[in-house]
Image 1: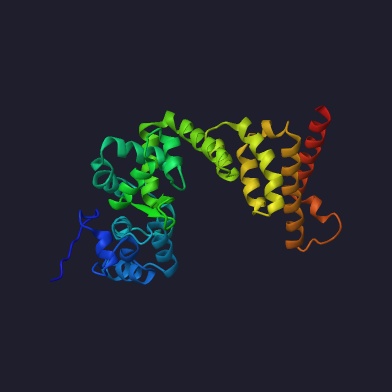
Image 2: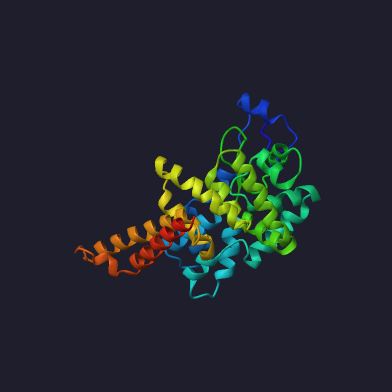
Amino acid sequence: MHLVVATREDPSLPLARLRARGDLTELRLADLRFTPAEAAEFLNRMMGLNLSAEDIAALEARTEGWIAGLQLAALSMQGRSDTAGFIQAFTGSHRFVLDYLVEEVLQRQPEHVRSFLLQTAILDRLGGPLCEAVTGQKDGRGILEILERGNLFIVPLDDKREWYRYHHLFAEVLQARLMAEQPDQVPTLHRRAGEWFEQNGSAADTIRHTLAAGDFERAADLVERAVPEMRRNRQGATVTELGWLKALPDELVRFRPVLCVDYALHYLAAANGRAWRLGCGRPNAGWRCRPARRGWSLWTKGNFAACRV
């Protein structure tokens, strides 16, 4: 006898024992996800669209192959001429996606689970201790396992059930609801996340959440400490650093010699690269570029700031 069970949540059956005995065949999220070829068949043939391969690949990536998401996007594109622009802007805040996930998923959860979902939406990855620190709830690992068993748009990042992430569209829905319902809580949640990451050795995550919390003085201190270490380890510091520096207010950077000089180096490097790209490999050609002028200005400010201290 073969028994077929279709359910969103894991049924109350001895799944581990059945799996170990080879008596269980499972079709889970990864198996149900549409491939680009299947997405093309569905969107162009079944839904009557005429999307390019690039548009299909972009939409498949945005929805992560989620069939309901593809269908909601397809319905929204009916009669539109700028499909590429729509796909680029298609997020969890689109009204069809928002309504579906709020009504079908979020509103059906107990209050403590709903609160957990909203408050952890600020995180790129989810771990039990981290979620506990951010939400103040106990048993973060247990709640994550409940979400996984309930197939609530949560994706495991390892085989040890230590780290997860939310499906991209679901995360965007949660973030939108959090901003609508608890906007004053968002800086506090980011501050808690930043403190946890600082205690657990992730400088980049610490800085990102501290910036999001609006604590720029502390973020500037963290950047000054992190940059030398990142450069020693060659951890792709150039792009990451520049993003941090641009997120800091100019008036704060101006009085930080280390940050001024670091900012200047980025602009000077950009000026040299631009000069070569334009065929301006002549001596001093790069100094006529705007990045070079900006870099020299910041370098000078950094030196003056150092003299003052």
